[in-house]
Image (cartoon, rainbow, N blue to C red; front, side):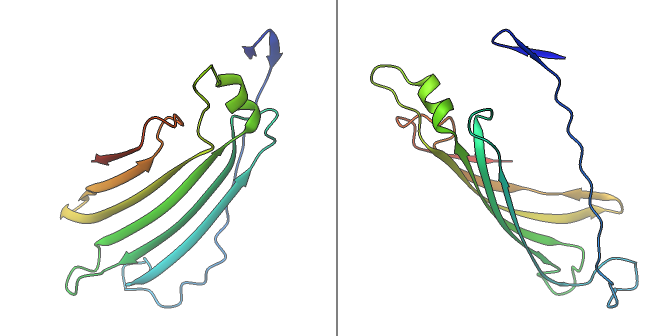
Length: 142
C-alpha cells in the first residue's frame, strides 16, 4: 500500500510473454544463430495519473557480427520517454518549464570473456536526462 498526496492506493503489475517462434534454424547449441533481430515497443498510460505517459523504443541486435565469434552481439537501441502535461505543469516554476521528453540512444557490444562470463561495454547519449530544458545532452559509458 502506497500513499501519494493523501490518496491511498494499491498498485499491482503483472506481465507475461509467450514466444511463438519455431526456431527451425538453430546453431546446434539450442540458440538462434547469427543474424539481425529487430524490435519495437510502445507503451502509453493516462497522463492524468502517470508522469511518463508515452514510451517508444526501437532496437536492433546483430548476433555474431564478427566471423568466428558467433556468441558476440552488437546492440543499437533508441528510446523516448514522453512526460505528461500534468507532470510538467506540476513541476513548473517561474522561469522553468520541464522538457516534454527524454531521448536515449545506446550502442553496446556483448562478448564472451570466459565460458559463462560475458561483458557488455556500451555508450549512451541522453537528450534532456532530467527533463530540464537548461540541461542538454549527457553521454554515459558503462
